[in-house]
Length: 412
Figure 1: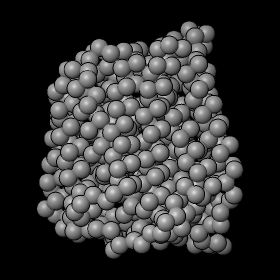
Figure 2 (figure 1 turned 180 degrees about the vertical axis):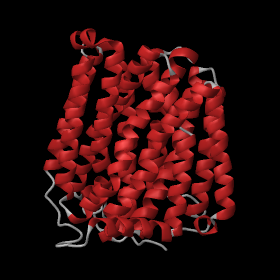
Figure 3 (figure 1 turned 135 degrees about the horizontal axis):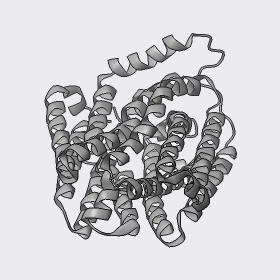
Figure 4 (figure 1 turned 90 degrees about the vertical axis):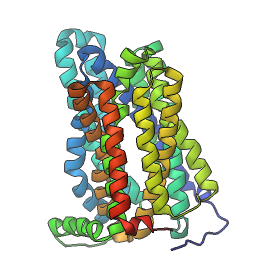
C-alpha cells in the first residue's frame, strides 16, 4: 500500500505545531526527572534492583489504566483528557520535589525518601497511562490522513530531539544546581506544555453518543490488534526487544561504577540514543529506506540487540557513547516503522483503544524492561545482564523472521 502525498507539510498546521511544542517541553520534563530519580535512588541504595523498581513502579499503573484510557480517548474530549493527565504529572513532580528537599529529606531519612520517590513515580505512571494513548490518538485529528505517515515521523523526531536535550540538561543541572532547582525546571516545563495544549481547540470525539458498555469495547480493541497480524507482530517484536534490551535503566551504574563519569556523564549517556535517533529520523523524513518496511524493521531490531551487547562489554566512555548513539539510530527505524503501521492500518474510531494496546505493548515494556534489567543485574551482574538482554533480542528477531512472514513482506 502506497500513500500519495502533496506539497503541503504538517508543520504548516498551527495546531500540530502547538502539539509538537507541548511534546517538547513535557518530554524534557520526563527526561530530567528520570535522570534525577535514577541517580538519587542508586546513590542512596547502591542496589541495581532499586533501578528496576523505578520501572516497575511506573509500569504497573500505566498498564492497569491504559485500556480504560483508550476507551475514554475514543468517546471523549482528547485534549481535555491530556490536560488533566499533565496536571496529574505536575502534582506528582511537585510531590517528588517536596520529599527530596534537604529539610524534609532530613526528617524522613533516606529509606523513607526512596519509598516516597517510588510512590510519586507510581502516580506519574498513572498519569502517563492516560497521556500516552490519548496523545497518539489526538495528533491524528490535527492533520490530514494523507499526511499521517509524515506527521508520525515528525512527531517521533521532535520527541527524540527533546529526549536529547532533557537528559543532558538534567545531568548538568543536577550536578551544577542541585536537585531542587532541577525539579523546579521540570515543573516549569510541564506548565508550559499545558499552556500549549490548551491553545489547541477541542476536537469532536471519534464516536459520538456511544452507549456500548466498556468491557465489550475494550475487548474489541484487543481483538482488532490480535487479528491484524501485521500490527500484532510489529508490536510484539518491539515489545520483547525493548523488554530484554533495557540497558538504559542501568546507566546510573555504568556512569558511577564502570565508566566513572558522574551525573554529567549520565546525562550524556542517556542523551546519546536520542541523538542517534533524531539524526536517523530526520533522514527518514527526507527519504525512504530501500527495501520493504517489515524487513527493515527486523534488521533495525537486530542492530539494536548487537549494539546493546557491545555496550555491555565497553569500558570506554566515548565508545559507550557511540554505541548508544547507534542503538538509538536502530531503535528509531523500528519506532517510525511501527508508528506508521499503526497510524495507517487503524480506523479513526479505534485509534484510542489500539493506542492503549500499543502503550501496554511498547510504552510500558520500557518500564518493565527496566525492572527486568535491574533484577538481572542483581542476579547475574551488571555487564552479564546487558549481554544476556542483547542476546535474547537477537534470538527474538531470528524467531520473528522465520514465523512472521506477513510482517517481513509488509511495505507501505
